[in-house]
Image 1: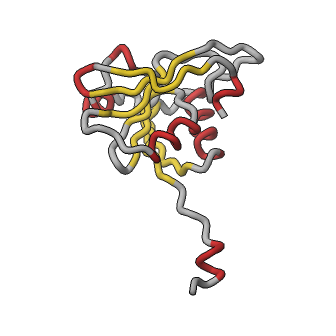
Image 2: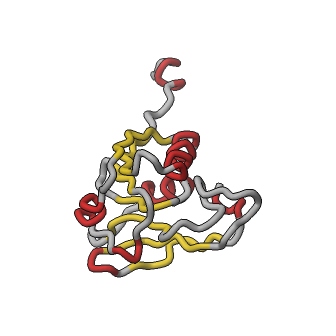
Length: 145
C-alpha cells in the first residue's frame, strides 16, 4: 500500500546546466521558458564557452547563443523549445546522438519573441561527426508548446 504522501509527491524537475553569456537577454528568456515548462536550470555565465560546445561535439554550423546539458550528457543548443527537450529525454537514442539544436536564432522561438513575428525552423538531432537528422519541423508559433 502506498501512502498519500507518496501518491501526491511531485516528480523532481529535470536539471539542465545552461552555459550562456551574462549579458544575453534572449538566453535569460529561454531559461525562463524551460523553468516554466518544468525544468530546473543551473546557469553558468561565461563570456566565452566555446569549449563546452567543442567538448560536446557541436559543430559551428549547429551552434547558437547558449548550450544546455542534461545529467545524461545530452546537449541542447540554442532556442530549443522545452516541449522537444521533454520528448527527447523520454526516448532512447543511439550512442552517436549528441542532442538537439536550433541553429542561429530564429524569430519567434522561445526567448526570441519579437512581437508577432515567427520564422519557421527545424529542430535538428545532432550526431557525432557532424551528421544530423531533422527531429521536428516547426511551422507555427503554437507548435512549440
